[in-house]
Image (cartoon, rainbow, N blue to C red):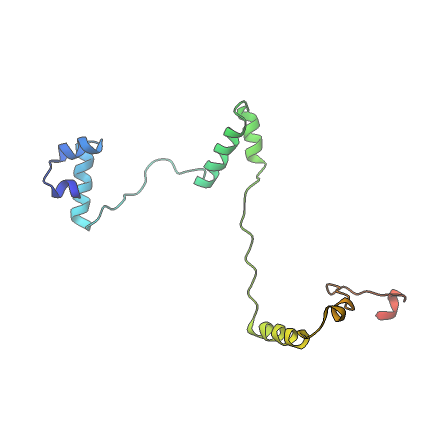
Length: 135
């Protein structure tokens, strides 16, 4: 846009930009029509790999430059991909209230009081009795 506003010819702009005069003319026409340069639809064969997969493949290639194409394909096909862990659901207002109530109830406990607690992770523990006694 700046080059056109400075009244340079499309030939000079093309030379400065390192592209053809017809490309400059097409871009200027699109700018006049839309007020901005709108990218056209991509033509050609659709991509088979994503940009992320391209980076992964490049990393495999650079990892061992003496690797054969077959070895690289085997590493690629093993399917080791990075994934984001699924986000845990937030706790509900009811759960917050229960947790706060529990914390307030036990906030005055001393270390000695906590030493008497067995944290079981909700597993059933039977000490000195048959397992069948707590059914």
